[in-house]
Image (cartoon, rainbow, N blue to C red):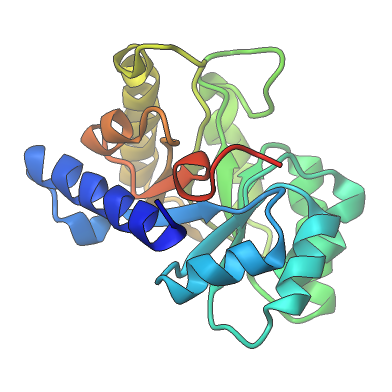
Length: 229
């Protein structure tokens, strides 16, 4: 299959997953993860209708974003972000999925102030408590969000997680449900400058389960672009 056929297939599967659990398919958006893929492959995806692209590495993303600047797509940063790369992230990305510390948030806020931008962010939560993954713990997420919420050049738009990997995607369900429960709890607290509108969870292997648990952004790479280069 070419990229257009793969995208059609993925969109159909997203729609079916949403409709099966009684959700409007329009409430689930596809983030096409284009890391390690060259600009011409990404252009093919844009021409096939992709509107959101997800990148993991600043330098690689900067080259692609510059090469594809004439195309009206939204770029999301979904990888681990180091504080010394914050200034580039703010200039390049519409939404940063992976904010997990007050230190990083303050740096992003400072860089946003310099360029007169309110940077949209998600808070990454490590629901599986895995040492190899970034993210704040579920227990500490609310206090971190309250601390970040006072930073004037950041806007918290929701939560993101990467659950442990399982061969059986249904085993990821408790982790997705935990994040969704936390999302609803934070939403109910009505913290100023915090809009819980996005739940970024679910990838190629488990996005159906994530959608059933409330995901609004699914991050899919290999099912669109093939295995990583």
